[in-house]
Image (cartoon, rainbow, N blue to C red; front, side, top):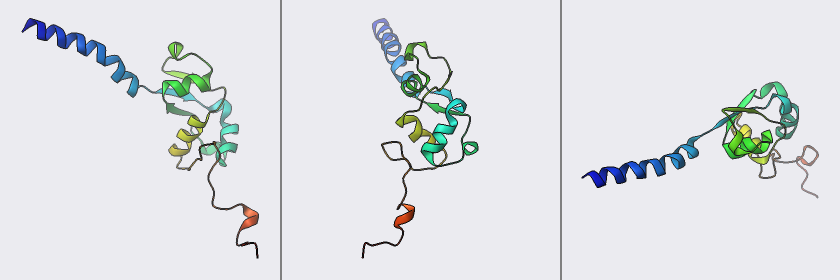
Length: 115
C-alpha cells in the first residue's frame, strides 16, 4: 500500500506542471501597440481592450522576453499573428492566417463580375 501511495505522489508531481502549463495565461498590455493592432484588425483603437489573455508562448513573443522570465503580466512591444487572432476572436472579428482581417470583397469590386 505504501508503494502505491508513493507512486501516486510522484506521478502527481510529475504530471502537475504539464497540466498547469496548458491552462496558464498571461495578461498582455497591448496599449502601446493598439494603433497598429487596430489597423491590422480594421477597427478603431478605442474598440480594443487594454489587455488580452494569451498563452505564455505568445506573450513571450509579443513582449520580447523569454518564457522563463514571464510574470503574470507583460507589455507588448510587437504584434504576432497569434495575438491578432486572439484579439480578433475577443472582439468577434475573423482574422485570416496572415493576420489580415477577412472581408467579402474589395470595396471597388462590389457587383463587378468582369463583364
